[in-house]
Amino acid sequence: MVAVAAGAYVYWLTRLHPFESTDDAFVDARQFSIAPKVAGYIVDVPVTDNQHVETGAVLFQIDRRDYEVALAQARAQVASAEASIRNFEAQIEGQKAQVAASEAEVTQAEASLKFAREDAARYRDLAEKGAGTIQRSQSSSSTLDQQQAAYDRAKATLVAARTQVGALAAQKAGAEASLATGQAQVAQAELNLGYTTVTAAQPGRVVQLSGAKGQFAQAGQTLSTFVPDDIWVIANYKETQITDMRPGQHADIEIDAYPERKITGHVDSVQPGSGTAFSLLPAQNATGNYVKVVQRIPVKIVVDQWPTDVAIGPGMSIVPRVHVR
Image 1 (spheres, rainbow, N blue to C red):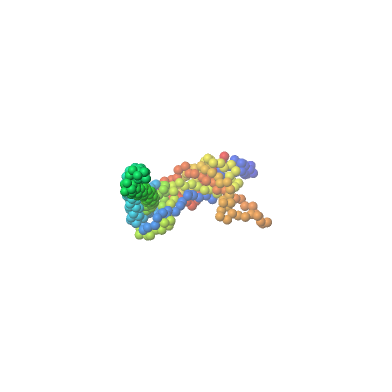
Image 2 (image 1 turned 90 degrees about the vertical axis):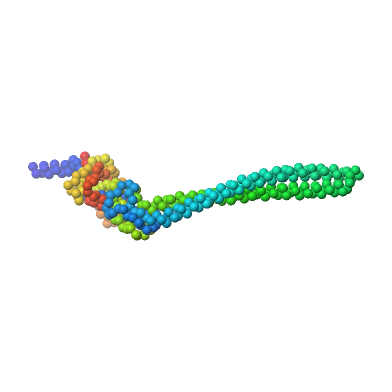
């Protein structure tokens, strides 16, 4: 009878065993360091160790004054560049009017020059034929020279006016470049000012708080660790236990710290490889003295609802039982 019972138990244990359990399991999370993006003196720390916070809660406040000054300076540079652009635009419009006036003068001088040429040619012909006086011919030639000089001056004035328009346009382009640079500096200064307020990106707990009021914090310096509310269980099952384990299977979970709490969850995923294979220094088994060791496979188990009245965090020991049959 004892043999039958023992055989039945062994059969149940090896063939009909409805669940797989392990005590090599713990709570895990993607905890990370909290650090400011800008340097400065800490003027306020409105949180305490192990405090739970919601998204957007202020964790640290860096002194804003230096960054407010930098923002004001950047905005002043933008205003100066905008004023320069308006000034150059006004000068360009004025210079365009000067170009138009110079073009009119060139047209007038050209007409006068044409008349003077014709007049000089006519009196020269008359003088050569003896019908006109040499004095009159010389006077018309002198007038022609004067009109030619006036035309040349008008042309030079027009060229200078057009050149000035180009120079002013180039200066305006430089002012526009300065404006773009200033606007970028304003944007960066606004970002830096915003970075002085360090907030929680998601719900979770503040742990290992090291930042203190009056402390000078460097950019990137760790001031605390943050543990998000999104936590789960990593159970390291023997590779012989995961034969029938699949995502979605129900799991009963016990917490060593709170053995009276019975919580449930389900298998989320099974790592495609042993834990040692993904370690910093993977085991090398290419030796003549190899001894086969059953490997551990990490299995991620997601809890349906964590208790809210007790503190649960990474590293706490868990005993999960996954229903595989």
